[in-house]
Length: 329
Image (cartoon, rainbow, N blue to C red; front, side, top):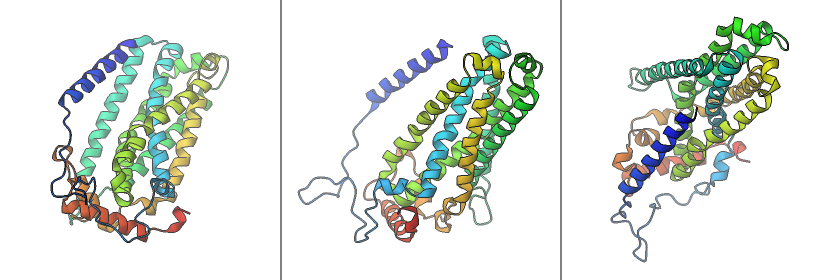
């Protein structure tokens, strides 16, 4: 099990060295300077609106934004926590050894890859107006509901078929497919949950605080799943280690707890679904969301002084003015 870690360490260090060697400072914007002649970091295209100065804290205090953040943090964290349970189940309960654990993890990779291809295909489905038929919010809701249902049904079936206490390990070996299949099937929902949650959160940032895109992505998209993984892995260790493995066979309590957590997140998303769905103007060709979506990092997304940048910031000011105050107060 140490070889994958060594491989990841070497590849990440190599990538960091390559990035530092190829890094070049961004040239200052031309034609955008302050009173003393220094370049400005962001053109002041919005002013006069009392809600244009909304803080980052008020953005995360909105119910639909907070729900999306929690779903992305713990939803993606669930995928990583489940993979930690595979070697324990395969080696300690089913007695398959490292080879059997590798087969299960490979099956998970295949399932995730196939469903990732399905998500890509769904994103290319267009209606008569050229707009996507499947929006990001639907993908996110579909993924979290499927994940929660799979985990809760798995925990129930394990409790009914395997039981607890003496003889549970023998029952698990006799019903090995029942033990392994729910874990593999649960991973199938993550392409929908992960891509949908990522796109939804990015759209919300573009809608309300586009000038804070960098810090929002760092907090939620990058570091959020790591925090979720740490917490859920700690829960897995608390409920499925030592004597608990011989007592439960499959990780019954761990999966039940994670399933209830994801079910609560699914209910939260359903309650905020109308607020999370893309607005009509978000799906127009010249909307802020579509402008940012078609930018590439290689083209330096939203260059300073670009008319597209004015559109994005103006749309954010309008969204803040039209938004209900009950999400913030």
